[in-house]
Amino acid sequence: MRKTKILVIDDHPLIRDAVVMALSGADTSVFIASDFSSHVESCADPDFVVVDLALPGMGGVESVREARRKWPRASIVVLSATETRNVVLAAIEAGAIGFVPKSYSADELVEVIKEVATGKIHLPISVGANQGANEGAGVDSLGSMTPRQMELLSYLLCGYSNKEIVLCTGLSEKTVKFYLTGLFRLLKVRSRTGAVVVAARAGLVIPPASAFNRRSTALAQ
Image (cartoon, rainbow, N blue to C red; front, side):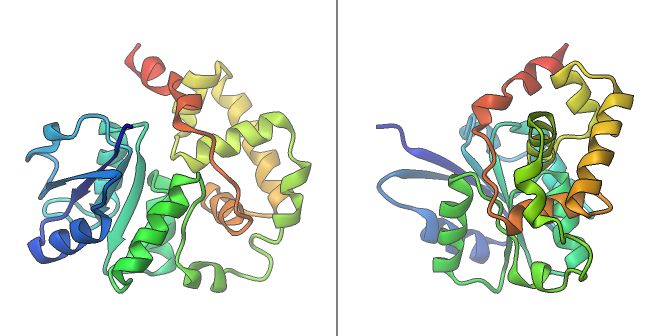
Protein backbone atom coordinates (compact mmCIF):
# COMPACT_ATOMS: atom_id res chain seq x y z
CA MET A 1 0.00 0.00 0.00
CA ARG A 2 1.39 3.38 -1.00
CA LYS A 3 2.19 5.68 1.89
CA THR A 4 1.09 9.30 1.91
CA LYS A 5 4.12 11.51 1.34
CA ILE A 6 4.35 14.73 3.34
CA LEU A 7 7.12 17.28 2.89
CA VAL A 8 7.64 19.71 5.79
CA ILE A 9 9.59 22.90 4.99
CA ASP A 10 10.46 25.05 8.01
CA ASP A 11 13.71 26.65 9.09
CA HIS A 12 13.00 26.29 12.83
CA PRO A 13 14.20 22.83 13.98
CA LEU A 14 11.95 22.69 17.06
CA ILE A 15 8.80 23.49 15.09
CA ARG A 16 9.83 21.25 12.20
CA ASP A 17 10.52 18.31 14.51
CA ALA A 18 7.23 18.82 16.34
CA VAL A 19 5.33 18.81 13.04
CA VAL A 20 7.14 15.68 11.89
CA MET A 21 6.33 13.92 15.16
CA ALA A 22 2.66 14.86 14.85
CA LEU A 23 2.34 13.68 11.25
CA SER A 24 4.45 10.52 11.37
CA GLY A 25 2.55 7.26 11.24
CA ALA A 26 2.37 3.81 9.71
CA ASP A 27 0.65 5.15 6.60
CA THR A 28 2.76 8.29 6.10
CA SER A 29 6.30 9.08 5.01
CA VAL A 30 7.42 12.48 6.28
CA PHE A 31 10.34 14.35 4.72
CA ILE A 32 11.93 17.55 6.01
CA ALA A 33 13.76 20.55 4.57
CA SER A 34 14.77 23.93 5.95
CA ASP A 35 14.19 25.72 2.63
CA PHE A 36 13.46 25.04 -1.02
CA SER A 37 17.06 24.33 -1.93
CA SER A 38 17.90 21.73 0.71
CA HIS A 39 16.91 18.07 0.42
CA VAL A 40 13.59 18.69 -1.30
CA GLU A 41 14.71 16.28 -4.02
CA SER A 42 14.41 13.46 -1.47
CA CYS A 43 10.63 13.75 -1.70
CA ALA A 44 9.57 13.58 -5.31
CA ASP A 45 5.91 14.29 -6.02
CA PRO A 46 4.66 14.79 -2.42
CA ASP A 47 0.98 14.52 -1.61
CA PHE A 48 1.18 17.35 0.91
CA VAL A 49 3.62 20.21 1.42
CA VAL A 50 3.51 21.83 4.86
CA VAL A 51 5.42 25.08 4.50
CA ASP A 52 6.32 27.95 6.82
CA LEU A 53 4.98 31.25 5.56
CA ALA A 54 8.05 33.12 6.86
CA LEU A 55 11.01 31.30 5.34
CA PRO A 56 14.25 33.34 5.21
CA GLY A 57 14.55 35.45 2.09
CA MET A 58 10.89 35.05 1.20
CA GLY A 59 8.33 37.73 1.84
CA GLY A 60 4.56 37.66 1.87
CA VAL A 61 3.23 34.44 0.39
CA GLU A 62 6.24 33.77 -1.83
CA SER A 63 6.83 30.41 -0.11
CA VAL A 64 3.31 29.29 -1.08
CA ARG A 65 3.82 30.31 -4.69
CA GLU A 66 7.16 28.50 -4.83
CA ALA A 67 5.63 25.34 -3.35
CA ARG A 68 2.79 25.51 -5.86
CA ARG A 69 5.26 26.02 -8.70
CA LYS A 70 7.43 23.05 -7.69
CA TRP A 71 4.61 20.66 -6.83
CA PRO A 72 1.45 21.70 -8.74
CA ARG A 73 -0.43 18.53 -7.78
CA ALA A 74 0.35 18.65 -4.05
CA SER A 75 -1.98 20.01 -1.39
CA ILE A 76 -0.24 23.02 0.17
CA VAL A 77 -0.75 23.65 3.90
CA VAL A 78 0.68 26.82 5.44
CA LEU A 79 2.20 27.16 8.90
CA SER A 80 2.21 30.71 10.22
CA ALA A 81 2.68 32.68 13.42
CA THR A 82 0.42 35.34 11.90
CA GLU A 83 -3.24 34.65 11.21
CA THR A 84 -4.72 37.98 10.22
CA ARG A 85 -7.49 37.86 7.64
CA ASN A 86 -5.37 39.48 4.93
CA VAL A 87 -2.48 37.04 5.45
CA VAL A 88 -4.76 33.99 5.44
CA LEU A 89 -6.61 35.04 2.30
CA ALA A 90 -3.39 35.95 0.50
CA ALA A 91 -2.03 32.47 1.24
CA ILE A 92 -5.21 30.80 -0.01
CA GLU A 93 -5.23 32.91 -3.16
CA ALA A 94 -1.59 31.92 -3.78
CA GLY A 95 -2.60 28.25 -3.80
CA ALA A 96 -2.72 26.94 -0.23
CA ILE A 97 -5.77 24.91 0.73
CA GLY A 98 -5.01 24.80 4.43
CA PHE A 99 -3.83 27.47 6.87
CA VAL A 100 -2.50 26.37 10.26
CA PRO A 101 -1.64 28.98 12.90
CA LYS A 102 1.38 27.93 14.95
CA SER A 103 -0.85 28.22 18.01
CA TYR A 104 -2.60 25.01 16.90
CA SER A 105 -1.92 21.83 18.84
CA ALA A 106 -0.38 18.75 17.22
CA ASP A 107 -3.80 17.07 17.16
CA GLU A 108 -5.34 20.08 15.43
CA LEU A 109 -2.61 19.99 12.77
CA VAL A 110 -3.33 16.33 12.10
CA GLU A 111 -7.04 17.10 11.75
CA VAL A 112 -6.28 19.83 9.21
CA ILE A 113 -4.24 17.38 7.11
CA LYS A 114 -7.11 14.88 7.25
CA GLU A 115 -9.55 17.60 6.24
CA VAL A 116 -7.59 18.82 3.22
CA ALA A 117 -6.98 15.19 2.23
CA THR A 118 -10.72 14.94 1.54
CA GLY A 119 -10.49 17.95 -0.76
CA LYS A 120 -11.82 20.55 1.67
CA ILE A 121 -10.22 23.90 2.40
CA HIS A 122 -9.27 24.70 5.98
CA LEU A 123 -9.29 28.30 7.20
CA PRO A 124 -8.95 29.51 10.80
CA ILE A 125 -12.34 30.15 12.37
CA SER A 126 -11.43 33.81 12.80
CA VAL A 127 -11.45 34.36 9.03
CA GLY A 128 -15.06 33.32 8.62
CA ALA A 129 -16.05 35.12 11.80
CA ASN A 130 -14.55 38.41 10.62
CA GLN A 131 -16.19 38.31 7.22
CA GLY A 132 -18.46 41.23 6.47
CA ALA A 133 -22.22 40.84 6.55
CA ASN A 134 -22.59 41.17 2.78
CA GLU A 135 -19.30 39.63 1.64
CA GLY A 136 -19.86 35.93 1.15
CA ALA A 137 -23.63 36.05 1.63
CA GLY A 138 -23.89 33.86 -1.44
CA VAL A 139 -23.12 30.50 0.18
CA ASP A 140 -26.62 29.33 -0.69
CA SER A 141 -25.95 30.21 -4.34
CA LEU A 142 -23.28 27.53 -4.76
CA GLY A 143 -25.94 25.08 -5.84
CA SER A 144 -26.99 27.43 -8.63
CA MET A 145 -23.61 27.47 -10.36
CA THR A 146 -23.37 26.31 -13.94
CA PRO A 147 -20.90 23.50 -14.74
CA ARG A 148 -18.53 26.10 -16.20
CA GLN A 149 -18.71 28.27 -13.08
CA MET A 150 -18.05 25.22 -10.91
CA GLU A 151 -15.05 24.35 -13.07
CA LEU A 152 -13.59 27.85 -12.78
CA LEU A 153 -14.21 27.97 -9.02
CA SER A 154 -12.34 24.67 -8.71
CA TYR A 155 -9.38 26.21 -10.51
CA LEU A 156 -9.48 29.18 -8.13
CA LEU A 157 -9.48 26.84 -5.15
CA CYS A 158 -6.34 25.21 -6.51
CA GLY A 159 -4.59 28.58 -6.77
CA TYR A 160 -4.68 28.95 -10.55
CA SER A 161 -4.13 32.39 -12.06
CA ASN A 162 -6.31 33.65 -14.90
CA LYS A 163 -3.55 32.90 -17.40
CA GLU A 164 -3.22 29.32 -16.11
CA ILE A 165 -6.99 28.86 -16.41
CA VAL A 166 -6.74 30.08 -20.01
CA LEU A 167 -4.04 27.51 -20.78
CA CYS A 168 -5.94 24.66 -19.15
CA THR A 169 -9.41 25.39 -20.52
CA GLY A 170 -8.65 26.81 -23.95
CA LEU A 171 -10.88 29.80 -23.21
CA SER A 172 -9.73 33.32 -24.00
CA GLU A 173 -8.62 35.52 -21.11
CA LYS A 174 -11.55 37.84 -21.82
CA THR A 175 -13.97 34.90 -21.56
CA VAL A 176 -12.41 33.70 -18.31
CA LYS A 177 -12.80 37.18 -16.81
CA PHE A 178 -16.41 37.27 -18.02
CA TYR A 179 -17.22 33.95 -16.32
CA LEU A 180 -15.43 34.96 -13.11
CA THR A 181 -17.33 38.25 -12.96
CA GLY A 182 -20.59 36.31 -13.20
CA LEU A 183 -19.39 33.86 -10.56
CA PHE A 184 -18.46 36.64 -8.14
CA ARG A 185 -21.84 38.29 -8.68
CA LEU A 186 -23.62 35.00 -8.00
CA LEU A 187 -21.67 34.39 -4.79
CA LYS A 188 -22.02 38.04 -3.72
CA VAL A 189 -18.26 38.54 -3.40
CA ARG A 190 -15.88 41.09 -4.87
CA SER A 191 -12.80 38.98 -5.50
CA ARG A 192 -11.40 35.49 -6.01
CA THR A 193 -10.39 35.34 -2.34
CA GLY A 194 -13.97 36.07 -1.38
CA ALA A 195 -15.11 33.20 -3.59
CA VAL A 196 -12.60 30.89 -1.91
CA VAL A 197 -13.90 31.85 1.54
CA VAL A 198 -17.48 31.16 0.46
CA ALA A 199 -16.45 27.75 -0.85
CA ALA A 200 -14.55 26.97 2.34
CA ARG A 201 -17.47 27.96 4.56
CA ALA A 202 -19.76 25.73 2.51
CA GLY A 203 -17.38 22.76 2.75
CA LEU A 204 -16.96 22.58 -1.02
CA VAL A 205 -14.67 19.72 -2.03
CA ILE A 206 -11.85 20.35 -4.49
CA PRO A 207 -11.67 17.79 -7.33
CA PRO A 208 -8.76 15.33 -7.11
CA ALA A 209 -5.44 16.66 -8.40
CA SER A 210 -5.64 14.13 -11.22
CA ALA A 211 -8.50 16.18 -12.67
CA PHE A 212 -6.08 19.04 -13.17
CA ASN A 213 -3.05 17.21 -14.50
CA ARG A 214 -3.42 19.27 -17.66
CA ARG A 215 -1.93 22.20 -15.79
CA SER A 216 1.63 20.87 -15.79
CA THR A 217 1.38 19.89 -19.45
CA ALA A 218 -0.16 23.17 -20.52
CA LEU A 219 2.34 25.33 -18.66
CA ALA A 220 5.27 23.36 -20.06
CA GLN A 221 4.26 24.06 -23.64
